[in-house]
Length: 321
Image 1 (tube, helix red, strand yellow):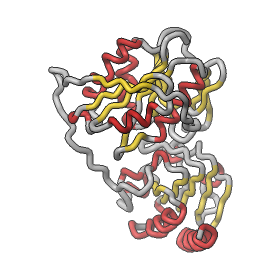
Image 2: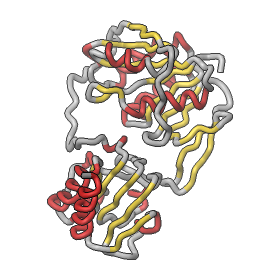
Image 3: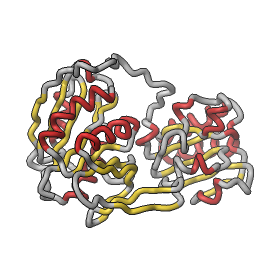
Protein backbone atom coordinates (compact mmCIF):
# COMPACT_ATOMS: atom_id res chain seq x y z
CA UNK A 1 0.00 0.00 0.00
CA UNK A 2 1.57 3.29 -1.10
CA UNK A 3 -0.96 5.42 0.76
CA UNK A 4 -0.83 5.63 4.56
CA UNK A 5 -2.99 3.51 6.85
CA UNK A 6 -4.91 5.23 9.63
CA UNK A 7 -6.20 3.93 12.98
CA UNK A 8 -8.85 5.81 14.93
CA UNK A 9 -8.13 5.41 18.64
CA UNK A 10 -10.80 5.08 21.28
CA UNK A 11 -10.52 6.38 24.83
CA UNK A 12 -12.58 5.36 27.84
CA UNK A 13 -12.15 6.38 31.48
CA UNK A 14 -8.89 8.15 30.69
CA UNK A 15 -7.28 5.13 29.05
CA UNK A 16 -6.67 3.92 25.51
CA UNK A 17 -8.99 0.99 24.94
CA UNK A 18 -7.45 -2.41 24.28
CA UNK A 19 -9.33 -2.69 20.99
CA UNK A 20 -7.33 0.29 19.67
CA UNK A 21 -4.11 -1.70 20.04
CA UNK A 22 -5.85 -4.64 18.35
CA UNK A 23 -6.88 -2.35 15.48
CA UNK A 24 -3.25 -1.19 15.18
CA UNK A 25 -2.11 -4.79 14.89
CA UNK A 26 -4.84 -5.41 12.33
CA UNK A 27 -3.50 -2.49 10.31
CA UNK A 28 -0.01 -4.03 10.41
CA UNK A 29 -1.31 -7.40 9.29
CA UNK A 30 -3.17 -5.82 6.39
CA UNK A 31 -0.55 -3.32 5.27
CA UNK A 32 2.72 -5.05 6.14
CA UNK A 33 5.49 -4.00 8.51
CA UNK A 34 6.93 -1.46 6.08
CA UNK A 35 3.70 0.51 5.69
CA UNK A 36 3.24 3.92 7.26
CA UNK A 37 0.61 3.50 9.98
CA UNK A 38 -0.65 6.63 11.70
CA UNK A 39 -3.35 7.17 14.30
CA UNK A 40 -5.88 9.76 15.42
CA UNK A 41 -6.81 10.28 19.06
CA UNK A 42 -9.69 12.59 19.97
CA UNK A 43 -10.75 13.86 23.37
CA UNK A 44 -10.01 16.36 26.13
CA UNK A 45 -6.75 16.38 28.09
CA UNK A 46 -5.24 13.62 25.94
CA UNK A 47 -1.65 14.84 25.65
CA UNK A 48 -0.31 11.97 27.75
CA UNK A 49 -2.42 9.39 25.94
CA UNK A 50 -1.21 10.67 22.56
CA UNK A 51 2.37 10.13 23.69
CA UNK A 52 1.49 6.65 24.93
CA UNK A 53 -0.16 5.79 21.62
CA UNK A 54 2.91 7.02 19.71
CA UNK A 55 4.86 4.18 21.28
CA UNK A 56 2.84 1.68 19.26
CA UNK A 57 3.28 3.18 15.80
CA UNK A 58 6.23 4.60 13.89
CA UNK A 59 3.91 6.93 11.99
CA UNK A 60 2.27 10.10 13.24
CA UNK A 61 -0.29 10.38 16.01
CA UNK A 62 -2.72 13.21 15.32
CA UNK A 63 -4.08 14.53 18.62
CA UNK A 64 -7.31 16.53 18.50
CA UNK A 65 -7.67 17.92 22.02
CA UNK A 66 -10.63 20.12 22.96
CA UNK A 67 -12.97 20.36 25.99
CA UNK A 68 -16.02 19.84 23.77
CA UNK A 69 -14.60 16.47 22.67
CA UNK A 70 -14.40 15.01 26.18
CA UNK A 71 -17.33 12.67 25.43
CA UNK A 72 -18.10 10.95 22.15
CA UNK A 73 -20.41 12.88 19.85
CA UNK A 74 -20.68 11.51 16.31
CA UNK A 75 -20.97 14.80 14.34
CA UNK A 76 -18.22 16.46 16.41
CA UNK A 77 -15.83 13.50 16.18
CA UNK A 78 -16.43 13.11 12.45
CA UNK A 79 -15.69 16.81 11.98
CA UNK A 80 -12.54 16.43 14.11
CA UNK A 81 -11.20 13.65 11.91
CA UNK A 82 -12.46 15.06 8.59
CA UNK A 83 -9.49 17.29 7.79
CA UNK A 84 -6.97 14.57 8.66
CA UNK A 85 -8.71 11.96 6.54
CA UNK A 86 -9.05 14.29 3.57
CA UNK A 87 -5.40 15.35 3.86
CA UNK A 88 -3.93 11.85 4.16
CA UNK A 89 -6.36 10.02 1.86
CA UNK A 90 -5.51 6.75 3.66
CA UNK A 91 -5.79 3.47 1.82
CA UNK A 92 -7.32 1.87 4.93
CA UNK A 93 -8.88 3.16 8.13
CA UNK A 94 -9.17 0.81 11.13
CA UNK A 95 -11.45 1.21 14.15
CA UNK A 96 -12.70 -1.03 16.93
CA UNK A 97 -16.04 -2.74 16.34
CA UNK A 98 -17.52 -1.01 19.37
CA UNK A 99 -20.58 1.20 19.76
CA UNK A 100 -18.39 4.22 18.98
CA UNK A 101 -16.51 2.56 16.13
CA UNK A 102 -19.67 1.23 14.49
CA UNK A 103 -21.15 4.72 14.63
CA UNK A 104 -18.13 6.58 13.28
CA UNK A 105 -16.95 4.15 10.58
CA UNK A 106 -19.73 4.78 8.01
CA UNK A 107 -19.16 8.53 8.22
CA UNK A 108 -15.45 8.09 7.52
CA UNK A 109 -16.25 5.73 4.66
CA UNK A 110 -18.54 8.39 3.19
CA UNK A 111 -15.80 11.04 3.46
CA UNK A 112 -13.42 8.79 1.50
CA UNK A 113 -15.97 7.30 -0.86
CA UNK A 114 -14.72 4.00 0.53
CA UNK A 115 -16.06 0.53 1.06
CA UNK A 116 -16.44 -0.91 4.54
CA UNK A 117 -15.90 -4.35 6.09
CA UNK A 118 -17.23 -4.68 9.63
CA UNK A 119 -16.78 -7.03 12.59
CA UNK A 120 -13.50 -8.52 11.38
CA UNK A 121 -12.04 -11.32 13.52
CA UNK A 122 -8.89 -12.13 11.52
CA UNK A 123 -6.83 -10.82 8.63
CA UNK A 124 -5.04 -13.24 6.34
CA UNK A 125 -2.24 -12.68 3.84
CA UNK A 126 -3.42 -10.98 0.71
CA UNK A 127 -5.59 -8.70 2.84
CA UNK A 128 -8.40 -11.20 3.27
CA UNK A 129 -10.78 -10.16 6.05
CA UNK A 130 -12.71 -12.85 7.91
CA UNK A 131 -15.98 -12.08 9.69
CA UNK A 132 -18.80 -14.15 11.22
CA UNK A 133 -22.26 -14.26 9.63
CA UNK A 134 -25.61 -15.95 10.39
CA UNK A 135 -25.26 -15.49 14.15
CA UNK A 136 -21.79 -17.02 14.10
CA UNK A 137 -22.87 -20.20 12.31
CA UNK A 138 -20.72 -19.41 9.28
CA UNK A 139 -17.88 -17.15 8.19
CA UNK A 140 -17.18 -15.11 5.11
CA UNK A 141 -13.91 -13.78 3.76
CA UNK A 142 -13.93 -10.44 2.00
CA UNK A 143 -11.41 -8.11 0.38
CA UNK A 144 -11.47 -4.64 -1.11
CA UNK A 145 -11.27 -4.73 -4.90
CA UNK A 146 -10.17 -1.12 -5.34
CA UNK A 147 -9.97 2.25 -3.63
CA UNK A 148 -9.91 3.00 0.06
CA UNK A 149 -11.48 0.80 2.72
CA UNK A 150 -12.74 1.16 6.29
CA UNK A 151 -12.43 -1.81 8.67
CA UNK A 152 -13.86 -2.39 12.15
CA UNK A 153 -12.18 -5.03 14.32
CA UNK A 154 -14.09 -7.14 16.84
CA UNK A 155 -12.52 -6.91 20.33
CA UNK A 156 -10.52 -9.86 21.70
CA UNK A 157 -9.80 -11.48 18.33
CA UNK A 158 -6.61 -9.90 16.97
CA UNK A 159 -3.59 -9.74 19.32
CA UNK A 160 -2.74 -6.21 20.51
CA UNK A 161 0.13 -4.34 18.85
CA UNK A 162 3.52 -4.34 20.54
CA UNK A 163 5.62 -1.27 21.27
CA UNK A 164 7.84 -0.14 18.40
CA UNK A 165 11.16 1.69 18.08
CA UNK A 166 11.46 4.48 17.25
CA UNK A 167 8.16 5.83 18.55
CA UNK A 168 5.93 7.91 16.34
CA UNK A 169 5.60 11.68 16.30
CA UNK A 170 2.67 13.42 18.02
CA UNK A 171 1.08 16.13 15.87
CA UNK A 172 -1.43 18.46 17.54
CA UNK A 173 -4.44 19.40 15.43
CA UNK A 174 -6.81 22.23 16.26
CA UNK A 175 -10.57 21.83 16.51
CA UNK A 176 -13.32 24.34 15.86
CA UNK A 177 -16.89 23.16 16.25
CA UNK A 178 -18.78 23.16 12.95
CA UNK A 179 -21.43 25.84 12.58
CA UNK A 180 -24.18 23.29 12.04
CA UNK A 181 -23.38 21.27 15.18
CA UNK A 182 -26.69 20.88 16.99
CA UNK A 183 -25.55 19.41 20.29
CA UNK A 184 -22.57 19.02 22.61
CA UNK A 185 -22.22 15.98 24.87
CA UNK A 186 -21.17 17.28 28.29
CA UNK A 187 -21.03 13.97 30.14
CA UNK A 188 -21.83 10.28 29.76
CA UNK A 189 -23.25 8.34 32.71
CA UNK A 190 -22.76 4.60 32.32
CA UNK A 191 -25.36 2.31 33.86
CA UNK A 192 -24.62 -0.97 35.61
CA UNK A 193 -20.91 -0.38 35.24
CA UNK A 194 -18.95 -3.41 36.38
CA UNK A 195 -15.31 -3.54 37.34
CA UNK A 196 -14.43 -5.09 33.97
CA UNK A 197 -15.52 -3.83 30.54
CA UNK A 198 -17.94 -6.43 29.18
CA UNK A 199 -16.90 -6.04 25.54
CA UNK A 200 -13.18 -6.49 26.27
CA UNK A 201 -13.30 -8.93 29.21
CA UNK A 202 -11.20 -12.09 28.98
CA UNK A 203 -13.76 -13.98 31.08
CA UNK A 204 -17.52 -13.37 30.98
CA UNK A 205 -20.07 -14.95 33.32
CA UNK A 206 -23.66 -14.58 32.13
CA UNK A 207 -27.01 -15.29 33.72
CA UNK A 208 -30.30 -16.14 32.06
CA UNK A 209 -33.86 -16.65 33.24
CA UNK A 210 -32.52 -19.48 35.38
CA UNK A 211 -31.18 -16.96 37.91
CA UNK A 212 -34.87 -16.37 38.81
CA UNK A 213 -34.40 -12.90 40.33
CA UNK A 214 -32.00 -9.99 40.66
CA UNK A 215 -30.62 -11.64 43.80
CA UNK A 216 -29.87 -14.68 41.65
CA UNK A 217 -26.98 -12.74 40.10
CA UNK A 218 -25.15 -12.55 43.44
CA UNK A 219 -23.42 -15.96 43.04
CA UNK A 220 -22.32 -14.88 39.55
CA UNK A 221 -20.97 -11.59 40.91
CA UNK A 222 -18.97 -13.46 43.55
CA UNK A 223 -17.45 -15.80 40.97
CA UNK A 224 -16.68 -12.81 38.73
CA UNK A 225 -14.85 -11.08 41.59
CA UNK A 226 -12.65 -14.14 42.12
CA UNK A 227 -11.86 -14.57 38.41
CA UNK A 228 -11.60 -10.88 37.50
CA UNK A 229 -14.47 -11.42 35.08
CA UNK A 230 -17.31 -9.31 33.71
CA UNK A 231 -20.96 -10.21 34.29
CA UNK A 232 -23.44 -10.32 31.42
CA UNK A 233 -26.99 -11.51 30.85
CA UNK A 234 -29.37 -12.92 28.29
CA UNK A 235 -32.24 -10.83 26.99
CA UNK A 236 -34.61 -13.07 28.92
CA UNK A 237 -32.99 -12.06 32.20
CA UNK A 238 -33.10 -8.39 31.19
CA UNK A 239 -36.74 -8.56 30.07
CA UNK A 240 -37.65 -10.20 33.37
CA UNK A 241 -36.17 -7.25 35.23
CA UNK A 242 -33.39 -9.25 36.87
CA UNK A 243 -30.69 -6.89 35.61
CA UNK A 244 -30.04 -3.80 33.54
CA UNK A 245 -30.11 -3.96 29.73
CA UNK A 246 -26.54 -2.64 29.78
CA UNK A 247 -25.52 -6.24 30.56
CA UNK A 248 -27.41 -7.80 27.65
CA UNK A 249 -25.44 -10.07 25.34
CA UNK A 250 -26.92 -11.20 22.05
CA UNK A 251 -28.24 -10.12 18.70
CA UNK A 252 -29.81 -6.95 20.11
CA UNK A 253 -27.19 -6.48 22.84
CA UNK A 254 -23.42 -6.66 23.07
CA UNK A 255 -21.24 -9.07 21.12
CA UNK A 256 -18.46 -10.60 23.21
CA UNK A 257 -15.59 -12.92 22.35
CA UNK A 258 -13.85 -13.69 25.64
CA UNK A 259 -11.37 -16.46 26.23
CA UNK A 260 -13.88 -18.09 28.59
CA UNK A 261 -17.67 -17.66 28.58
CA UNK A 262 -19.66 -19.21 31.42
CA UNK A 263 -23.41 -19.41 30.74
CA UNK A 264 -25.48 -19.90 33.88
CA UNK A 265 -29.15 -20.74 33.53
CA UNK A 266 -29.20 -19.73 29.86
CA UNK A 267 -31.15 -21.95 27.48
CA UNK A 268 -29.22 -20.90 24.37
CA UNK A 269 -31.64 -19.13 22.02
CA UNK A 270 -30.12 -18.28 18.65
CA UNK A 271 -30.40 -14.57 19.45
CA UNK A 272 -28.14 -15.05 22.48
CA UNK A 273 -25.72 -17.28 20.59
CA UNK A 274 -25.23 -14.47 18.07
CA UNK A 275 -23.56 -12.47 20.82
CA UNK A 276 -21.20 -15.06 22.31
CA UNK A 277 -20.76 -18.09 20.05
CA UNK A 278 -17.25 -17.01 18.99
CA UNK A 279 -15.92 -17.23 22.57
CA UNK A 280 -12.75 -19.35 22.81
CA UNK A 281 -14.16 -21.72 25.46
CA UNK A 282 -17.84 -21.95 26.38
CA UNK A 283 -18.94 -23.51 29.67
CA UNK A 284 -22.66 -24.11 30.20
CA UNK A 285 -24.41 -24.68 33.53
CA UNK A 286 -28.08 -25.65 33.25
CA UNK A 287 -30.53 -27.99 34.96
CA UNK A 288 -32.01 -28.98 31.58
CA UNK A 289 -29.74 -31.52 29.91
CA UNK A 290 -31.51 -30.83 26.59
CA UNK A 291 -30.91 -27.07 26.65
CA UNK A 292 -29.59 -25.85 23.24
CA UNK A 293 -26.67 -24.10 24.95
CA UNK A 294 -24.99 -27.49 25.43
CA UNK A 295 -24.75 -27.91 21.64
CA UNK A 296 -22.28 -25.02 21.40
CA UNK A 297 -20.58 -25.54 24.78
CA UNK A 298 -17.08 -26.98 25.05
CA UNK A 299 -17.87 -28.09 28.60
CA UNK A 300 -21.24 -28.61 30.23
CA UNK A 301 -22.47 -29.09 33.77
CA UNK A 302 -26.02 -30.38 34.22
CA UNK A 303 -27.04 -29.03 37.59
CA UNK A 304 -28.55 -26.22 39.61
CA UNK A 305 -26.50 -23.06 39.13
CA UNK A 306 -27.15 -22.07 42.76
CA UNK A 307 -25.29 -25.20 43.83
CA UNK A 308 -22.66 -25.36 41.08
CA UNK A 309 -21.55 -21.71 40.93
CA UNK A 310 -20.74 -21.36 44.68
CA UNK A 311 -18.72 -24.59 44.48
CA UNK A 312 -16.77 -23.21 41.51
CA UNK A 313 -16.18 -19.96 43.39
CA UNK A 314 -14.86 -21.84 46.41
CA UNK A 315 -12.50 -23.99 44.33
CA UNK A 316 -11.19 -21.08 42.24
CA UNK A 317 -10.63 -19.08 45.41
CA UNK A 318 -8.44 -21.89 46.76
CA UNK A 319 -6.48 -22.26 43.52
CA UNK A 320 -5.95 -18.54 42.99
CA UNK A 321 -5.18 -17.69 46.61
